[in-house]
Image 1: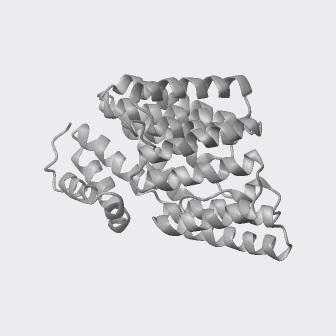
Image 2 (image 1 turned 90 degrees about the vertical axis):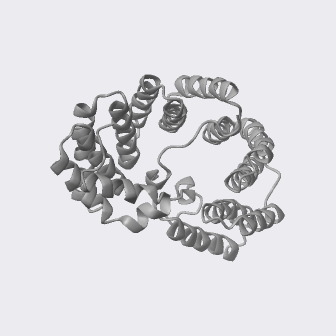
Length: 311
């Protein structure tokens, strides 16, 4: 079954962004997935600066990431046009060809064309390997795993995890976290919560190697808590989710998904008042939740009304 490995909680899957005006620094290419418009605007400024400096190759690199932002904004036609422009400006270097291929694949997958996306991801992996770019290779590999049939996906993930373990670099360990997270979601969907829990723990442990990625670590802890609740261990999961919600609030960045899961855990424990407290807080972000799934607000209201039986 294509697209058998689903990503993490997309609405909360944040990557740290580094506002660095050094155009040659790879970190200037990073996208903040919690602020796609802001990331796109920053990348467009960098592309304009590269163009003003007459650096066509660097401008083309930035265009590949602008296209990624357009894809995330569901402007698929615009994303493909931007990639066409990048090809006109770019070079035949393997690393650049890999970037173009992986972004074309992402656009196709996001637009519901997973089968058409796979050849681009495979091409990206081939070109990234030619360029000896470990980070881009693992990125492409994880995208192939997302669109491959289940058993093949697991084999591809195993290959990626072995690559990351051999490398041991922080970025390789980041991809180990991503791969474990995706497999965890696969097992969650199959109802194998014990295996899902094990992979989410492995993802958390991999992310610890990137101390700057605190939000990513928190998401991994959040997924561990979800698996624990489904394993009937809500008493362990509830304080975990509450501590995550409280930590985000302390940082000035409340997360309704952490609050929602805290409500689920307290409801599972039959603690109606505490469940209603967290559900009410999560519902303060109803517009954001509705954008992800309108059923979230309905379920939270049922928790508040005491109509949701412990599950």
